[in-house]
Length: 119
Image (cartoon, rainbow, N blue to C red):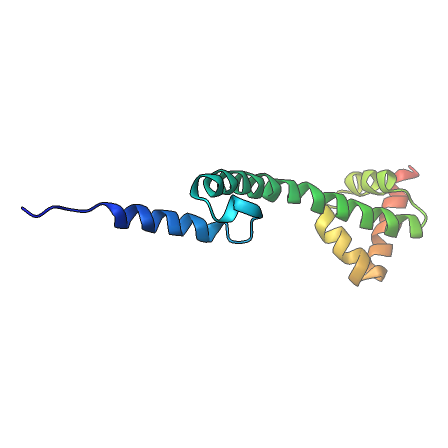
């Protein structure tokens, strides 16, 4: 049986990892051990920030809905409370989109919410 040299697989694995850390600073993109640490850290950051982005988007939607509802004379909390009492099931993402792209229909929702909060 012929002898098998083992360098090619390790080299392939190292090259793959070094290509993942291409934009990293200093030795974090050129030395294998440093690059491996850097890659693990960057992947964990990517995972956590994907989840963090969902909260960021929700905060942005709330900001937009609050600004638009205050422009129509109602605070955000009163607006959401009024919509809930009226039985209008529209999420914050859609409300924020309506506030930006369709102010007339958003104003009609504000009047519905005002009617429910005054009872």
